Image (cartoon, rainbow, N blue to C red; front, side):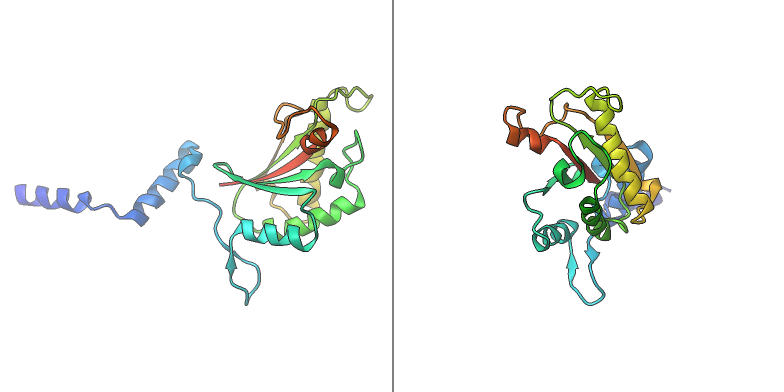
Length: 196
């Protein structure tokens, strides 16, 4: 029995990295710990093309359609965030998508719609107060913009609604100081966050 006990101890002392990663991933999903969840997998863009990371695909799309002034990527511990400035998507103080914005969303959806990852759609504004009959605050506007974007991507581009969530941050998550018109324009945006 003692010999068997030591054999068992020896067997479990060897860590199988692949098995450990799978167990950690499963436990992370169960307990909601994003730190141990696997990042977005590599994807093939075509049947004959080489494998590309999600960031590479998105950067190629931005370059191909000359979106570098209106769409920016950010990679961090949450995943990949696609910042889309509001001038691309909406008229001032409105949340209805224009025709040009639908083309932009269609192109982005071709890259992200088949990902297994959850996608969080966030609405952001600058710090200039709004008070209209439809939008009594920037909170209302930011949520409605996120909702319009999410609904279009689900209804028209086939994103899985089980994987989509929306948030409205109003002016409280700026990416630039609200001290110039140019910086305020950067803060008026919709973010598509591809979560790890």
